Amino acid sequence: MTEGAAGRALERRQERRIVVRMPMHVRGTDHQGLRFEELTESENIGRTGAAFATWHNLDLGDDVEITIPLPKQKAEGETDFATRGRVVHVAPGKGKRQRIVGVLFTGPRFHRVFSSEALG
Image (cartoon, rainbow, N blue to C red; front, top):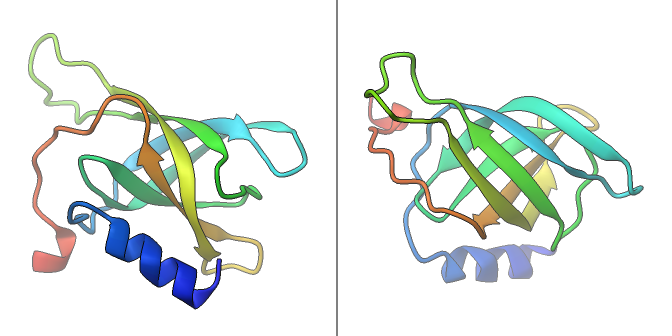
């Protein structure tokens, strides 16, 4: 994605994302058509999407399944958050092969309330 395209994607974002590290289980099909499952963590998250680090080669428009385990102190009857997402942003990550992938949730939205680690 070019810098101009990345800027337009950010402009289209309809809500603010919170910088927070949460464990995420991501499943999908990579650039070569190989199925993968990966335990990673969020870079940021909001009601309608999230960004996470991955070692897998994903393309814009790819679909993934996401599960975010809720804390052990969750309320009775509460289950882990599970949704689907479509890749809308791919950027280089910290490692040579790592990428930061931004997804727009195409399934249920995330309704947990938490404060940003950046505010700490």
